[in-house]
Image (cartoon, rainbow over all chains, first blue to last red; front, side, top):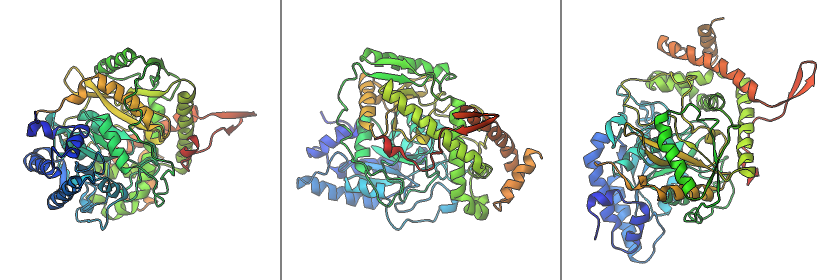
Length: 468
Length: 70
């Protein structure tokens, strides 16, 4: 029996692409469904800043013709997705008053590649200001609401892509991640969030937050959908200085293998103070890994939360200050207070601190890689030590979480460059989503996907969606 | 010098004048940075050379050389 429109809006790409390929469903039908839901729901969710209404219908008609002629491009062909508004493509505001009139003259590399793979670009999705400054009710653009609870935000900084997928307004979306901006909103919205190895996806044409930590990557409903999205945008870019000149494998190649006998390293060194509400579903997930035949190995010798903060936060904000200082000098009052203050803080970081942090970063990276070379196959830890998503902020939160033991466990894989994926692992006792991360050795996304997919398929979370 | 004065002086180097609200946020955040300095010092591996002298055993990852691990 054909699914209802509501069910179709929450399909996986894996399911929908099969129906498009077999011509059971037309890309035009799917694009019209998404546009109708955006018209209805975006005034409540605020996930899209700009919708390319005419362009997406025109692209959908072309996709329909191509599929009809047998020119099927792959799993993204005819699939409507959202693009975070720091990617250059049409109007590109960065979620900031300072760029509200900027229109890019060409698509960034990642968007070009996704279009080439057949994806339909629905529009530009909301972001924390320049991928960091938290939007509050006093910001020029409204915070994105979670479809699971409209009084709460969708997480960030890739809030719009997360909010859109969770509300059935897109099948996947692109985000960017400098300290956790893909994995954290994915946790908040019960989604999969992926950042591949540093250099895997071109950053050219994406507004930088911190050059040496920025990753472009997807949010999606399932592990396999996130692999399809990565497949669509990965690859060497000679004009991105950080781009890795490495072959792009078939990211789904190990996806359906079991994990019997694999060794899973638990980064207990970081999450020792994790909220018990988060630990309950997380520990349940660990038992599931064991039931699938994996062996759990604790790694208390790896870096601590405080060490991660001391390395990661200053690196992000020293870089960001170098990106923005001239604009802050001229337009500082037009930034969100939260963003401006973080940038000012970045200017306080001296060169000696910056070099010491980079030295510690190299040491931490080598320690994690050594652990995965000698002791375990992958690393696993919660995405955050507190459940998400938080209530919508009434006003700018300032800098209150600097030095306060902020229990977000994502930045370690940004400053080490290792691939990491967030997978939902249930809900806490208050009904808020909880997630875990799986990380692997550099350029071994296939193993990361294998372990994440095995857990996902043994659980039920990927089958759930908000009732909206 | 108090943190507030150091912050103002450092930002002045970049032509930035923080507001009173900005300074209130920046003061504790700057003090966290000073604390973290010792966290970094404690975690970095060194070789002791005797007579209170030491040499670092790792280099900053300024050029992201992750490709060599493929």
